[in-house]
Image 1 (cartoon, rainbow, N blue to C red):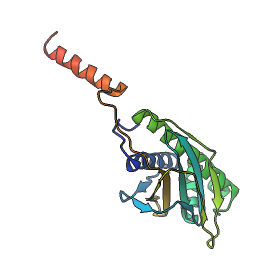
Image 2 (tube, rainbow, N blue to C red; image 1 turned 60 degrees about the vertical axis):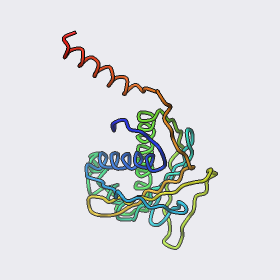
Image 3 (spheres, helix red, strand yellow; image 1 turned 135 degrees about the vertical axis):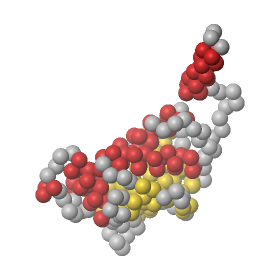
Amino acid sequence: MAANKEIKNTEDVLAILCDSVSSVLSKTTQTEIKFSPMIQKISKTCLKPDIGCFVLFEGAFSGLIIINLSADAAVEIYQKHMLTMGMPENELSNLHTSDDVGNMLSELMNQIVGDFQGELEYQAMLSINQTQPKMLVVNKELILSINTNLDRPQSRRVVFSTENRNTFYLEMSMEKTEFTKLKGYIGDNEESTKSENYKKMMDDLDI
């Protein structure tokens, strides 16, 4: 897990989510999945061609996560993941509309949000719950908007790229939230560091 750091706003939460997407997909495909450091502010999140996965979450804060993939990006991630699982190449689907591709993407989305939840709890002791991830193949003529009841929603988009330079997009919408750390609070990690530093000082003084 990443080192403990202070979480202040939407961008900090999004950074954790981006790390989860990159980490999970890199591990499951055994390739490098990169994302742009540039975050785009958008007016709303929506499903776009060719295939999209989405999940709602609530708890410490509420929001929506969407991953929109081109057909090429979806098939590449699917095939590389299945190859790492030992499936013969001649048995792999080549169509993003295949049920196998959709089911695999839904499972990977589930792993991504699970990792995201774990990091939030580890880094800020914040807890969220998720719905079951959903996948939808979207026609090029159609954009399906997902509406959620959020208080002053803030929406962001980040561009990701695969090993074969196929791009896909992460979109997140969450209620406007700011986090302020309680003055004088010492978390488990900070207490551990403080104890280690104290022990080192005592050792240096031969006490």
